[in-house]
Image (cartoon, rainbow, N blue to C red; front, top):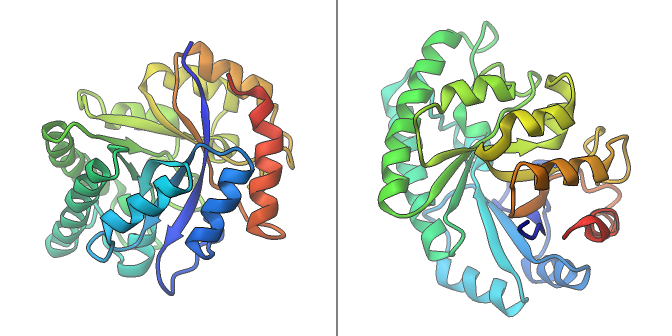
Length: 273
């Protein structure tokens, strides 16, 4: 069995707040993550064209960490760029951003880019037909699949709960969406599965070898260990389906991000092989 490693999601997004990623001075966050035994850090970057990639890689390495993945949801919150937008110019801009994310992921040596919130929304509240949105999203993923393959990277698509979007909520929907796309895998998020699946543990088995990345938070979206998930079951099933990679903490930083890092590590580190 491969080794599971621990990372956490840190925001690089001036002026943008999202309560399930860490906002804080980068060097301090990296120092604390290293102190509590994390092996990696996942960066949620709102604008990939604003990042000094060389400097980011250097400061990460100096902390003894590696980049586990690049998240992209803050680009949607900042600009509204969506891979499923019926507006060609908006969808084109989203694809431009994602190509840059893929390029950066290669430079940062993680070669993994998350599609979460930036897939967009659909339904009556936003006035976008969900059938059309799924079609456009699939077309965008086909473009990114080819781009990622040429650069030795992967896209990891995340089913999100219905309160964040109506566009692909369950593992089964995501599997159907990415069928035939060799460089698009699934991102399994333990919090979202508690809301959308019959069992979060069965969801891991259903996703199986398609799992390319994992986000962890407890049933209340607090740090692992502060809710009702059985983390031994989660870890066992991930190992059973052959997943070897990062568990990336994406949870509400309450009361603060140091406590989030500390509690998550104390819950998960003893279980990781």
